[in-house]
Length: 82
Image (cartoon, rainbow, N blue to C red; front, side, top):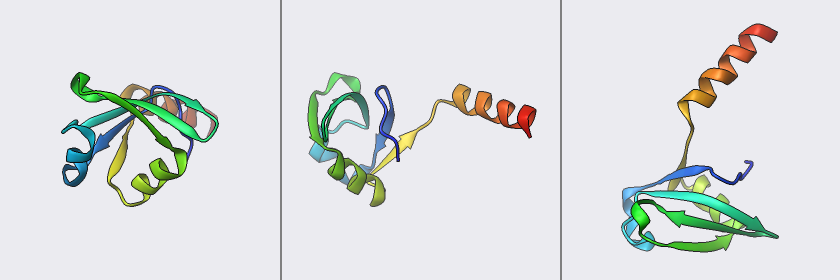
C-alpha cells in the first residue's frame, strides 16, 4: 500500500488509548522508513516505522479514509477510458 502525505486513517476503538484517545491519524511526512503523523482533534503528533504502520493496517487497527471526491473522480475517469 502506498503511504502518501495527507492520507487520513481511522483509528479503531481498541487502540485509541495508544494514540491519546484520538480517532484519526493524518500522515504529514516521510523520511526514509519513518512516517510522521498528527492525531485528530489536535491530540498530538508522532512518528513510527512504516513497517509498523503497515502492520496496523494489516490488523485493521487503522483503516484508510478515502476522500469521496477523489473516489468519484477516479470512477468517472475509469468510465471514460473503459
